[in-house]
Image 1 (cartoon, rainbow, N blue to C red):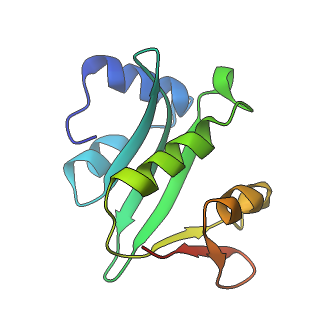
Image 2: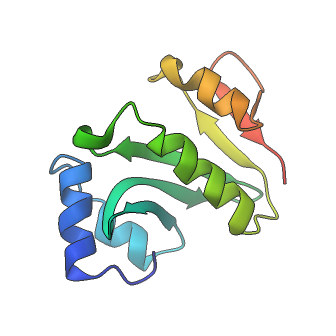
Image 3: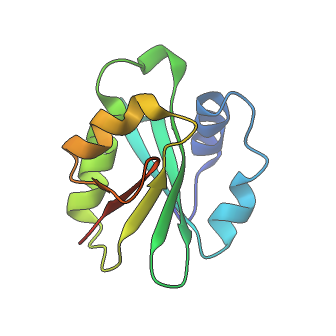
Length: 120
């Protein structure tokens, strides 16, 4: 998302449960905000922060009303297939170890106990 609409911003605010003060900076900078849409509403999003030789995946969040339905899996899988990444993506799952199975299923490999990496 390079230019979120007014409705997109409302949806992201709901998705991130009003913890979205970082969003404008992410959209305006070198970071990439990736979102998943269902029925014309954003229901999932994450940020890819630009690092020297990789992307750092952060802030993966699914809107509460649509959780436990595979939305994060679909959004991540679609992004990995369609966005043409040419650098690895790192994800620190230390605060969310329940996501290790999801990231492993999507082709991320553990680089240590809490960090997973996807290679293009």
